[in-house]
Figure 1 (cartoon, rainbow, N blue to C red):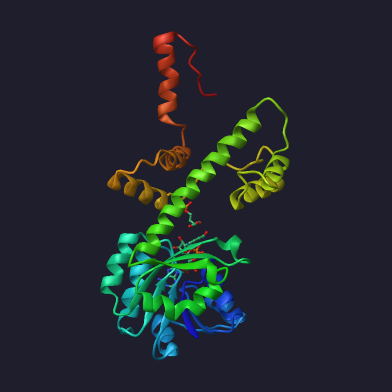
Figure 2: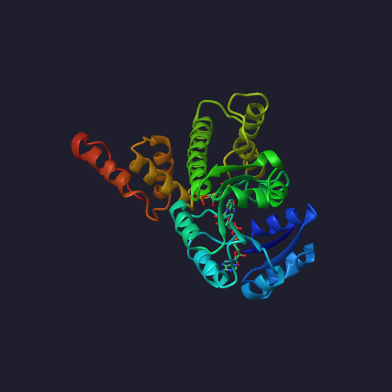
Length: 299
Ligand SMILES: NC(=O)C1=CN([C@@H]2O[C@H](COP(=O)(O)OP(=O)(O)OC[C@H]3O[C@@H](n4cnc5c(N)ncnc54)[C@H](O)[C@@H]3O)[C@@H](O)[C@H]2O)C=CC1
Ligand SMILES: O=C(CO)[C@H](O)[C@H](O)COP(=O)(O)O
């Protein structure tokens, strides 16, 4: 089959490569000509605009968007709109907010699939895990591409109607935040605790048969191997946060308690204070206020 791919960054290039490797044709476009050239080197047909991509795809267009969530998706859809009809299919494989996907599905002239994509650029060798929402017929139609981009047929599933794919991916990311936080806490205790431990060894032995083995734990092992047990000069600052924020907001709306995910998200926000956490500084000063405990001052 023939697939148009728009957005050829870390994730989009993998969609291109895996689709080509499975024997399909790819037409590729990105705002960055260098990214288009890389896709062309891999065997894709380069397009120099969205209109050109649509022209090259001809009838029954199947188009995969892998651009940053938010405005870039709306801008791309706006440009695509005039070239689409109801036989066409658009897949949004990015981390879009599920309510945006519901809105886009209603407005898009083509069938619209919201596809949560997990695995990250580091998971490219195995293929991704894909959670797809939208019309069943469109999901079936794009299945050969999903087979190629995912780990195989078991690596993608149809979740339900519009929005459900990105909804499931949003929750997946909330779980990801909490798992990262809990591994972080455990390793922090081991690092600060009673024994002088090689944390790469700890992660390695846990990854071999322990209850808590996982891919994230393998990535902890890799991090300790590459940075050292004390994580070298890796900074105390965590970026990202949009998908975790949406998960927590949804928990509040549905009245489902998500204390671990909320805490993990809060830790991220807290890590970004340039001048130290105000709340910790105040607690430090209050201990003097009530207990005459020595105030810890900055150097
Ligand atoms: N990096 C990751 O671990 C994962 C990322 N995602 C999601 O996949 C999407 C893409 O992520 P990445 O590949 O990591 O980002 P990236 O920043 O590496 O690549 C985005 C690409 O889109 C292009 N682009 C931006 N606006 C465009 C437009 N209007 N038209 C055409 N091209 C445009 C950029 O030039 C860039 O090449 C995002 O929604 C992200 O949240 C999903 C799962 C994992
Ligand atoms: O979806 C992903 C992994 O599953 C992306 O890596 C995403 O960027 C992670 O979210 P955040 O940037 O908030 O950490």
